[in-house]
Length: 150
Image (cartoon, rainbow, N blue to C red; front, side, top):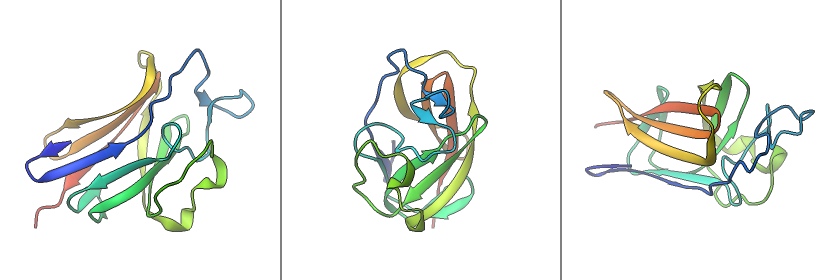
């Protein structure tokens, strides 16, 4: 996303649904189990960078580059920005070192939307913020990002 000198960049891999159960419980053998850390894509962990300081759901996050991981649940997701870069592997569980989380925010999950085959992250401009939206299967999660003007 670019707006003048303000840039948000996301690097992520886009897995496909391929008929699998994506979000659900471990007992259901979901690909992304509720309550477990997810690298929010495939292969290498998703990374996000900001050219300016921003507010994520109202909390300050300094300009820079972060690993982005999520902890999905049926109704809300935890969005985590982690200072370590280069996480890799199938890793759910303990791959991300929570002590290096710089910020965590909560986002509401919508679970009844038309199916999206390939995991997608997108941006849309809103009145006071930019919405970062993640979609996969019938789930959509979105949270606001506000540029701090000094």
